[in-house]
View (cartoon, one colour):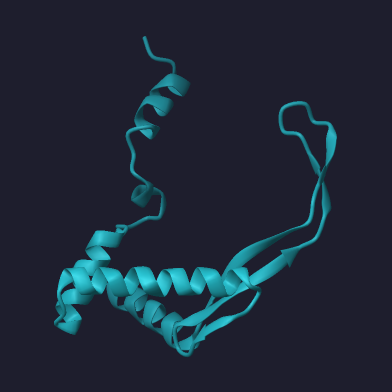
Length: 122
């Protein structure tokens, strides 16, 4: 007989990440297909353009420069200060060092589009 814990674990490992988000996730190839159709370009050229765009954003943010796409959002590098944490296994205090992490802040047009789509869905 399965204990509730084992039952839960058995079903959780079969779930895909989109279930955690409460919706469907579009993967890279689906994004390329949709963009190619909308821009009336080949999938190959659209894939190359997407890869170039992502590579450029990553390289720019890695140099600690912001990438601002008006209406869509801003990609930037943010500093996280050093802090005190706890080892989850032992409970002992530990030092978490400072680090730089990438951040994205959605623009107003993007936020409003998501908000209006959510209202239409209800």
